[in-house]
Image: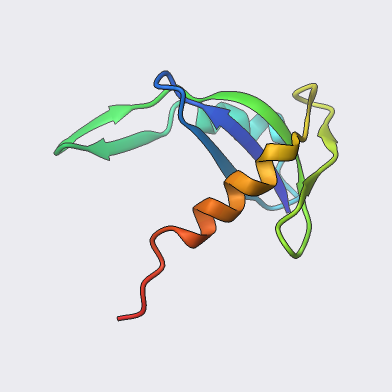
Length: 91
């Protein structure tokens, strides 16, 4: 899998994973304009790519993106792990 870490205007960093067949720059373009639903109103959140690379089968982020000119950061794996653990409940 590939990934892109982004930062929104509020400073929130998120990691987005996607198939290896999709180029980093194409995914970054889509992430820049994705809509969020917050407080009952839809709005666009401009996400700026800050790092990019690949994700292995255990969630480690590594490598770089040639199309974005960005590399993986050590903190990206921790952000991804936190995102994967938040919101999971067994009902």
